[in-house]
Length: 180
Image 1 (tube, rainbow, N blue to C red):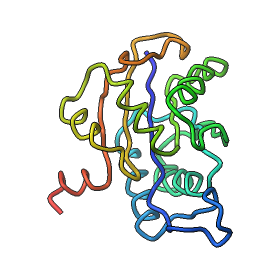
Image 2: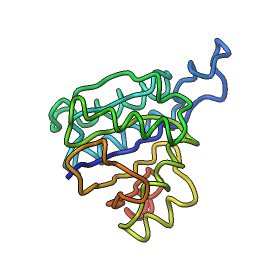
Image 3: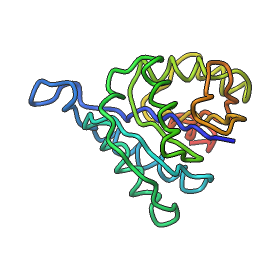
Image 4: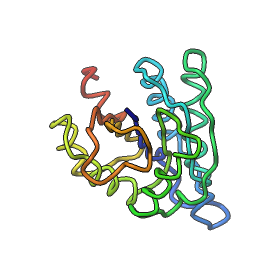
């Protein structure tokens, strides 16, 4: 069994001072949402054992803030900056997942970007949480987290429609379920 967690970066400023998209930083809401999703992960094991993070500043900040919210409880995963996640399409993201066979983590998290992450999440969901699949069909919002389980022994066997969506969560959905 393998678990894949797809986390889209949090909300960002519209433009970076440098003018480069990769340099965009989280805005205040994005920092809050990253901490909120990290707190949610902290209370909802199992936790990722390896995390691949896009090199874009917003993705790295999302991971760092989420990690800060969970690190007292969650065992430290291996974390790797992965430039290939920036602007990746479904086939590139699948290749990155397949390459995880080298280190073979039981639970892998990708922190990346739309539209690739959203398209991948839809493409992987062969079964699972009907409400989550419905919500995910519309969008993988900023700080959205899609969690998939695969009944496989090797990351190289991850394929389209082979994942079971265990849960789709976002700060907005957390607020709705808590009654805020």
